[in-house]
Length: 199
Image: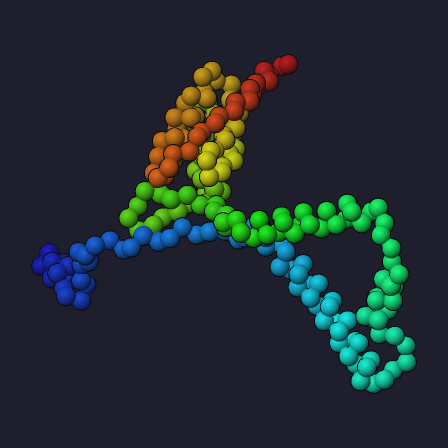
């Protein structure tokens, strides 16, 4: 039996990879900050297309009555300057500048790199769950909830034990020590008192 296992382990059909580690994967980026503008522009372009199609069909069929574009132009004809046009124009200009700046900003990132040669990343939600699990393992912690960002993780625990914040902080930092960039760990303690029997 031993010889069979040795032969199977050294069989050429199961090569052992002794080469360099796999090239690290790139960090995944989130959606652009201006993502909601795409659907809005699609709706506006669809509305413009409907108006142009309606007017084109009306011209081809020579139907009586004004087209929609002609009605809009006639409605704007003779329009004089009003006081509300100045703040409205400024608001439109500011919205345009905001859209340009937002479109040029880098895409958001919601993951953090783990110390690894192959490129391993954790989402902030996963980091929050790891922090909560580490806090739950601390003696005296009755419940734990965490919220994480790319810079810090805030752990809220319920406990009736003194100096539990330092223990939780140490446990969470140890659990997240594999991250390439350490996070700031903040601990909030909510006192929890058990009701005595007969009270």
